[in-house]
Every structure is written in C-alpha cells, then in structure tokens.
Image (cartoon, rainbow, N blue to C red; front, top):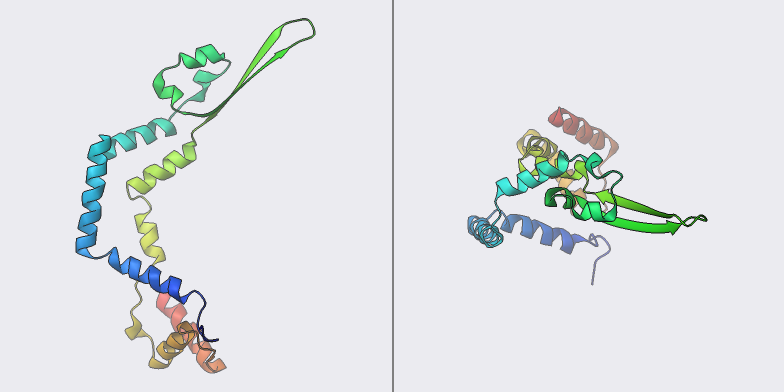
Length: 176
C-alpha cells in the first residue's frame, strides 16, 4: 500500500537510479563495449562507414531526381536511391487520351543526418555536461540541505518563507 506522502513514481525513479549506477560499473561498461564490437564486426560496419553514410545524406542533392520517370529513378546510382524514403507514382489520363505520370519522392532528412553526425562525434557533449552540473552540497547550508531532502522525500513539509528565500538565493548563487 502506498502512503499518501510517497511519490507515486518512486519505484520508477529508483529503477532509473539503479540502472544509471549499473551503467557506470566497469564490468558492465566492458561487457556493453564487447557486445557493440561484436555487433559491428558481424555487420561489417565501422564508425567511419556510419559517418560517411550520414555525410552522404547531409550533402545529398535531390535535383538529380527532378522530372525523372519511374524507370529513370530505377536506373539512378544506388547511393542516390538509398536517399529515397518514400515513393509514390500516379498515372492519369487526360481527356485527349494523353498519359501523365507523376512521381513523388521523399528523402532522408538532412537535419536528422547532421544531428546524428553531431551526436556520433560528441559535438553536443560539452552542452550536455553544462546542463548537468555537479552539485557540491558543502556550499549549501545545513538547513537548505534539510529542506531539499525533505522536499525530495515526498513529505508535505514546507520551509518557512524566510528559509525558502534563502534556499532560492543560495541556489542562484551556486549556479552563477
């Protein structure tokens, strides 16, 4: 039975914390790296291969496919055909008996390719580290720490207004 003061998602939070801790253990990190390496060898793909493919996506020029018929699209080089994610062909007849072929193509997203390259090479790592600063609790007063612990434990206790202002001030000072 859940107590009225406990957080309903505390089990989820605990599981996430345990998972995060496990992913930092050297034995688990080593095993994950081993499995990634085996998968890479099995697929015969390297980081360089992935980056080259993403670079091709990001630098693709779709004008090479404009005004082509379905048969002409089939004859495009494989590198260009791999950029196509959706193909739609419609054929309509005019009143005079002419046939009009319309081919619609959708391509891989250049923005997604660039984002994937940036993630792959660690471009966002500095930004991610800046968003998750380590907190040195020794800079906070004991009453501030107690208030934060009470707040995170799910109790309904609320610090007095003066202490709340001090918590806010110390937190602002800490992060600036």
